[in-house]
Length: 255
Image (cartoon, rainbow, N blue to C red; front, side, top):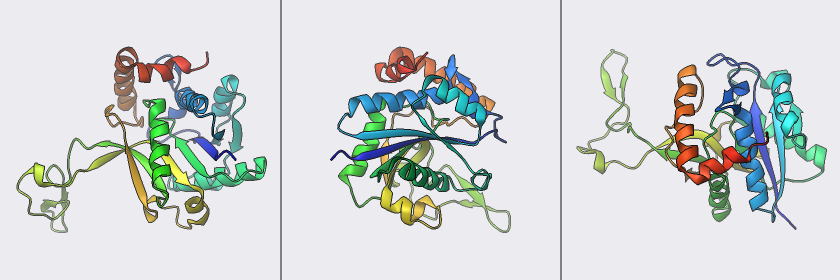
């Protein structure tokens, strides 16, 4: 029997940091369609999996943008209690899983979330993150990362209660080369095991056993401001022209 995989695309209406960011046009095409195209390519490359795709949102405009070109995507209208600024996103994943299992009668083995505001991913990244999770069944989730350009051991400080600058991590290393490798979470891909989603009561990712999938460093920016948007669009145009794997996703978008 094929493994059941649920891919989620999640986006709220509006945004305090960057107004209507999920509705933006990115390099001439809707931002959300980059994640949908990556999901499409993943499904084509993994016919051994039973893959469903759903959109979880409270935005009627986003529903229209998605379903105009991807009518097969299941729409889940997000309830008001899951629309607040401080609602853990894992609550939205849990809601998506619950609704889709009721709707389809399936029990999904894995949930993969592709973030709308992190469009620079290759289909091999989706497959690679899932492969890490499958290779290590003890993990509750796997999230995508890039190598950190700055390390909290040397390049970051905090102020103590007296206003003095202190190290973020107390240590006695004398060279960066002595420090453990650290990573930036790039908010692109999350792969969850069903059991963890069903049983978690806190909605806190770090309560689970976490693994990482390392992606190509594309600037480590998810779009949350006008500046992020302009920077990522410039990086994207370079990658679409120079790297076939990034270009594949761009070309796969339905027009």
